[in-house]
Length: 323
Image (cartoon, rainbow, N blue to C red; front, side, top):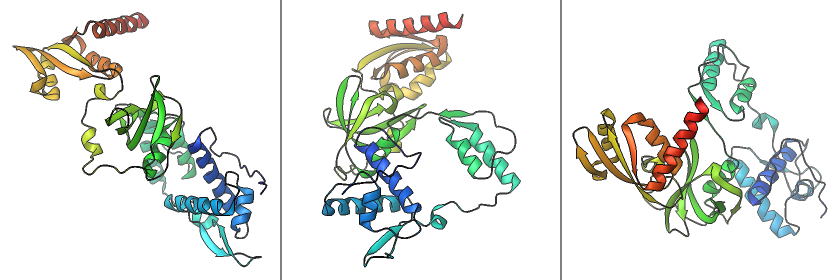
């Protein structure tokens, strides 16, 4: 069956199975909104690209898409088709579009302050403000910034569908069951069971190279007792897939007690008055550098030699750039 190539502006594009599904769903919503009468399944398949050619397959695919849209809160209604003895489908704008909220001036100002206090990459927050009645009041001082990542929507969707994902990370192919996608210390991470490593690992979303390969839905089950909140307590220098190294760091002054409290007494290998030497595993060197720099002149990296040299080189470059 020949498709007409329905393509409204603003749909999600890009390569890969996940991008294709996003684009098909976006086109499906636009198609069901932009119709004065219910559309039969055949009419929908003719207007929306991306469905398989045989009837049994595209009917199953449409049922999955319809369930997905309803799961997102998009009200796909089933009505009698006007010209055929079969069911028709559409989305009523009155059910889909945001109703008038009638916010007061004070409420708009409060909303404006909340949104401008956190900078969202891409400006989505400001665009939403205009839709809710416009900006109002003074901009709040920026308290934080939340970045995005190209693969973030696909990772969130794969986690929701319990579909494994394959991707390249630091030049190595990984296959992961994405248990959860979370924001930690300024970065987005996907946490899940790494098939090759045989354990739960975390990967930074913005360091994924290229596209994602997404597997079948319901391919894994999150283990009983899996607690994302508990994993948040893990240290950022352990969020990574770099070869693990045992870092030996000397800390003195008021920072020594704080470091022992954070790492635990098991990490202490030497203690002398207000000076301690701690040992801990590092799989994310960038996060490790940030941790050490945060201790200012109270910390010295002792071992291994290459990690110490890397920190010294980085600090030297930072100092040179600040002049």
